[in-house]
Structures are given as C-alpha cells and as structure tokens.
Image (cartoon, rainbow, N blue to C red; front, side, top):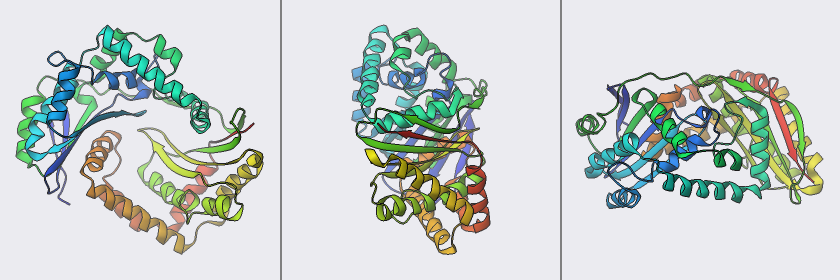
Length: 399
C-alpha cells in the first residue's frame, strides 16, 4: 500500500492514498454528527437527508441524475460524531465527482417542501423500527447509559422531528459545514496531482474557520435495568465504558474478539453450544473523540432471560478473573490482521477510515495493526479487567 499523503487547502484537510486500479473512492467527513444536535435531536440526520434534495444549481432530480451519470456509489451516513458523504467512481470521473460533492457541501438548499417530504420519510423509518424489540433494547440502553449530547438516537424521535423546521436544518448546515470541521479522503487509481488540482478548483468557497469543541460527554445509569414488552423473546445487552485512548481501544477490541460473538468466542460457545439458549450473539466497540463503549448482546427464548443474563455476566467476569490463553490471543490477532487487510483491499472502506480517523485522531489501520502485533497478553487482560470494573449497564428486555 502506498504511503498516505496529506495537504491542507483553505483549512480543509485532504488525505490521499494511491491504490492501483480503475476506481477511486472519496469520503468527505464532517464533524457534524448527532452529538451536535443540541436542542433538536435528529437534526444532523435530517441534514444528511437534505444533502440529496437539491442545491442552488441543481434540483433534486438533476442532482441524483448527475450522480447516476458518473456511474458511482453515491451515499451518506450520520453517526454520533461525524456525517460522511461518499462517492466511488472511475478514475476519469474523480474531478466531476469532487465537483458534485462540493456542490452538496456548499450549496445544498432546505426548502419547506423538500424538508416536509423528508421529515415524513424519517418518521416512517422510526415507526418501522418501533416493533423491533432488539432495536428498542439497544436504543433504550444507550439513552440511559449516557446523558446530554449522546443521550438520544441518531435519527431523533417522532416528537423532536415534528418540532423541527426547515430553517433549523439550514442553520445547522451553515454552522457545521466548514473546512475546519471537515476531512476529504481520496483513495484509488487517480494520481495525487489531479486530486490536488480538483480540490483547488472545487473546494474554493469555504474559509478555514474554527473547529468548535464537541459538547461534553456525560454518563448516566449503571447497574442493571429490566424492560418489558419483548414480544416473546428475551434480549440482553451489556454496555461497558472504555477510555477513549487508541491503545486501550485496541486492547479491549482484542478481548471482545475472545469474549464475544464469533463461533470460537467464549460467549458464543456458552450461549449457543453449551446452554443451547439462542443463536444471536454480538459484540463490538463504538467510540468518538472523548468517549468509547464496548457492548455484548444476546437473545434467547422468553423463559430463559435469567439464564441468558447469568451466561453473559459470568462469561465476562471469568475472562476478567482468569484472563486469556496464548492460543486465544494468537487467534484474535489473526482475525484483526484479516480485518485490516480487508480494509486495505476496499477503496471505499479505506477512504472512510482515513477521513473519520483523521477527525477522531485514531491511528491509521497499518499503525493499529503494528500495535496489535506487539501488544502483550497482560496488557489485553488488564484493559478488559479495568473496563469491566468501571461503568457498566446491563439491560434485559423480557415479558
């Protein structure tokens, strides 16, 4: 993999990496995720929707037709930290693709008509998830584990959307869509010089500005929480606060690979193979600039809620008390190496990782891989014990 090149244009950070082939992936990530919603939960997600509803030069049909003419994958996504606008096209279309992304970034319009239409779409999305008990559990656990800027779903609520107005979204976009809050990553077969020329040509309307600090992270409930109304199944999720330090995140990630959801993991073996309670087991990490959370989740039949909870808690605690074996660490490192290799093979995933990693300060994948290869067993065990002895919330949803 070629070395990563960086330059700054009028305050906009640009990251470029050559990856031979006919395609180039572009990711424009903006520090404008849901934690910046303020008093209007869901406004960042609504702003993402409005990026595709037309600009001062292109109406909705013309905008999306232009993207289709370039033949690439054109999309966006909003998390708690960032909103990312992505495009993957042929190398010869990169200049035009960057021009279209700049048009959306600088000149998206929020008309009353298009806003009301998209608001209905998002409300329908929320309604569609209301009947999913697993989604409800994860949502309610999350909003109780946090307070303040992280204590709401990314898409907001039906109530918050009904109180939202078009002018609120327009103001949000003007305030947050600045060069200082953004990173543009380009990965693919196009050369570095054409990328520099295209950036200078298209991203010329913004000023450097200031990258405002995000609202402070505050934690909420800990301990155990029981919810009712599961629709015949039992669901459990355990949230674990983790220090937002890259090396600690990597260590906890290795531990999660051993505790969690893969067929060789301890929890999968306990829940699925030994107890025969259920198949749905998951584990992972989510993080931002000043927060991080590990999660372990599972489901079983309605009458097995207590057994399922004991299985999750006992598996996590045994790993903290007894540690891991050398063979387990070898397997976990190999799996992480595979994920990093897969990331390197995907231009799209690589561009997104470079853009969002630059915003968050997380190491490049190849740097993280080196950390994994040199990390000792004692460090992984200590990171897991420390996280599990800190802030945790175990939530059970069962009738």
